[in-house]
Length: 151
Ligand code: 4NP
Image (cartoon, rainbow, N blue to C red):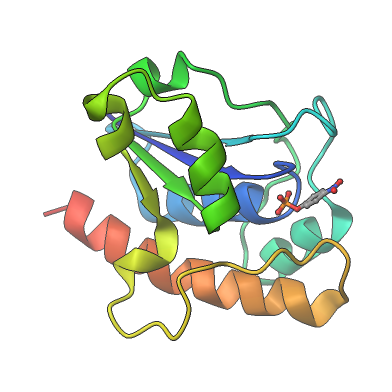
């Protein structure tokens, strides 16, 4: 089994979409994909309705997900930890116990060699367009990740 964790701030907008997208590209028998937030504000909540609808428009159903907070044990449970922005990166790396933990953490857009930005923008306070933009970015990055993992 290979395990991948997607991390953002609230675990209701970006990382639930990233989880759903990557899951849709990998066989469940060989891969575990999960997501978490660095903050606890939304623990137990369903993904933001705008993320749910954006994903559904692409045939990806994320309605069964519930927000949870990132925990130190996630470093033991996951092989790869993808964060959405520098703030997530700092928050997760702050909890790393050693260099091995730290080496698991990567900005997800680093997978896109030609990306103009390395941060997936937080769409929470914006409109629907922001969610569509996030979906496109995450879909591209997940294509690269899935292709490599399936080699
Ligand atoms: P996410 O978006 O980190 O992509 O889930 C956010 C969700 C909630 C908040 C901030 C960002 N919030 O401040 O409650």
